[in-house]
Length: 323
Image (cartoon, rainbow, N blue to C red; front, side):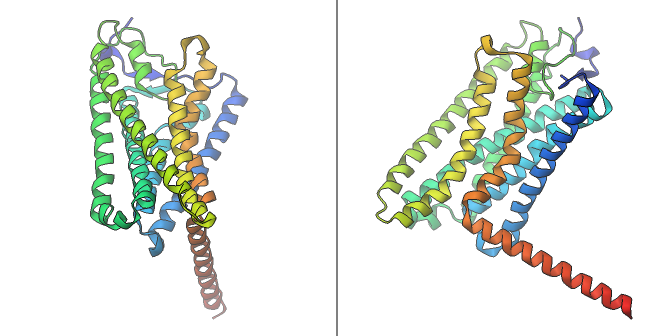
């Protein structure tokens, strides 16, 4: 038995105790992490570089890529380091920081996905008002509101969680720090206020989910009324990536937190946590680039431009060496 004042570190759940499998986990996570860095980095660079992509939809996608980079960088590097060095330890301050940034980035991403559904609703259902309702100032304000709401939400949860007395040791049943695992260590009578905050947060999340569903019902009705097949295909091509990202994000988190205890097990919990914390940031760039012709064309232009610049540098270097 211990209390929070005597805890200086937590013990994370290892993926395996076998050294060979630990190294396999390190290389697997390294591949996923590099794929997420490359995919999101390309999207950020392409949108910033191509003037044709300076529209509300791509502005929100730019923000989404930044959030994805942040969320995967919060959990994966520490897990990789633990597997590489065969340790389970994370400091008390490091655990608090991990919970704060994970809640901040994940919450901001969910609110941003809600805003992106509104963007698609206005673009398809009210195209004549698109420039008025989603001007540059309105887009900046909405994105800032998503980031600020996620920040405030994370601050409240982190402060509330780490103010609870911890009476049940320091071993966490997860490969990264998250609030439910900290609550399991708290004294039985002390976590009710955090539960109340989670209930309020769940109501807000549910309202956003209803907004997304209603938006896409309206979008589907509007798309089906488009007379030309080419017009319907173009409308669907801009909506399906966002809908796929929302579905992946919401379904994995709902399964992680709402699955019945009867099917819960350490191995299943570990797999599910990877699905909602690691896979979406790596998969999201692929989802958006596969269905979005504008983005694919801009990526090709950026790659050709980059190769041309590299070629010019090489020619100049060879010319200087010959002289």
